[in-house]
Image 1 (tube, rainbow, N blue to C red):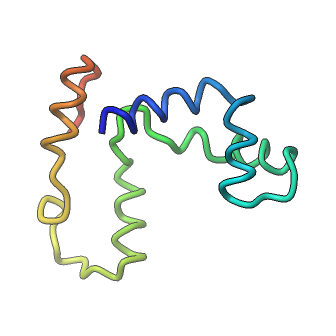
Image 2: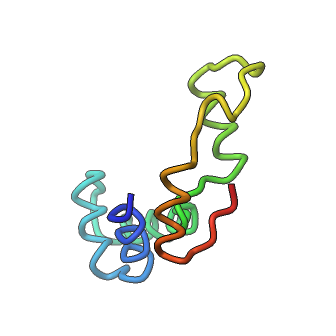
Image 3: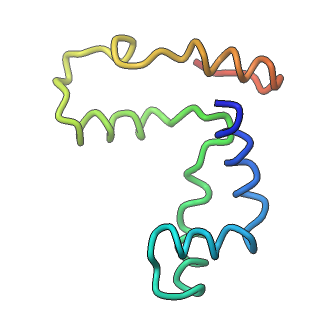
Length: 93
């Protein structure tokens, strides 16, 4: 989890290095398209690893999970909260 959070922070602050990787990984046709894709998605990457409530609702909808199942039964933020505490990045869940 720590590595993912550090990778996200790095990706958000090193566009020039990330765009070619994004182009190759996703298979985009050129660097210009990759740069536009980067700009479109970078603000969606949560720096603290906690997805928004809307993102969670979207995932539940895509997975076709019954709306009667509570979010607390689907996710456990315990380990993420421990990592965030070690980074001193306050957790919000």
